Image (cartoon, rainbow, N blue to C red; front, side):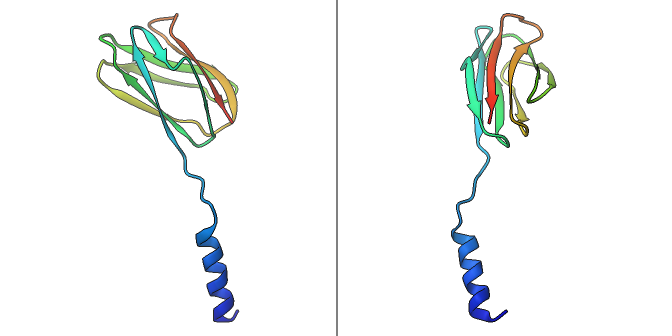
Length: 105
């Protein structure tokens, strides 16, 4: 490979668009998730922020992800990476009426 060809390839790679994972914040306040629906991309992260005065236990069972983040005390954050496409309902094990629909594309 000659030098000009290598430089050309390097410049093409540097100018190509790069997809970065995004971070989305979901608040837990008043025993509710906000927002109540969220569409994200595979590779994105959701930060579950407990803005409530009570503990929560965020978990999901669904085609895109199954997880249980455990007890989350007030004024704390817990992150979860979503790597596979799918649709799921995320709930609080302590407060069964709390739910958020997440679609991972």
